Length: 287
Image 1 (cartoon, rainbow, N blue to C red):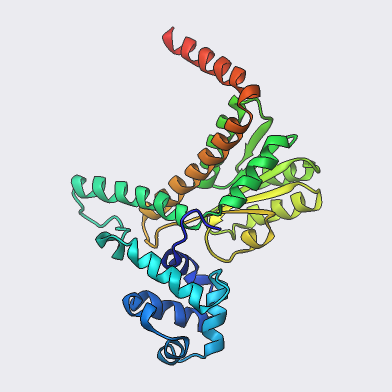
Image 2 (tube, helix red, strand yellow; image 1 turned 180 degrees about the vertical axis):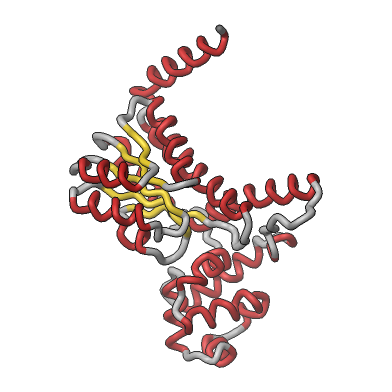
């Protein structure tokens, strides 16, 4: 179950990966959200030029057992909406003044975190924390901005004496995946979930018996389908760099959650490592 269930965010995130019929239902809902709680399944099917069965399939794709629970979630999502939520993400525009840029980037990053809380699954986080506590080693895989997230994760988990490393290019990913074994954890970081280098490394890690954790956008993707543990993020639907910035912030938040979860659960064992690493860094900075 998602930490905070918001079906409108789910629809927006999954829109590009839906079937044409499901997409028609989803787009109608997003464009006419206020009237949806008042519609029967037959009326929604008629308005979207689909069928009762198609609407029900759409509800199940969104993670709801039936139309009633779907409508309840729609009503709850409407109740939590703020006025700015109609267009929460504002892209960088040519000629924007600095005040506008500061406001828009801050809002985008903040909203990425808030929306991620609506789709990330608490039980999946718990499973990830459990395997990270007991694994032999951790390998992080990511290209570009996702690789930077992996580097941040490596720095954090190294502080509590976890054997880990980040791989950010295709060749090193293949080599690292080949050496993974049962008892190891491979964390694949990709917004799209379709990065070729990531999927190639995942296939090898899977054959070697490593536990596969995915940090990726809340949508259908090959990475999401093949991962043993799926940690979803929500990202903006905008076209310039602020979109990539928002996804990076969401991914970093997930990494922070995993690190804090492991460190908290293992605090008796890791507090000495946290103290040692803090003291040595602080000592170097004073020199």
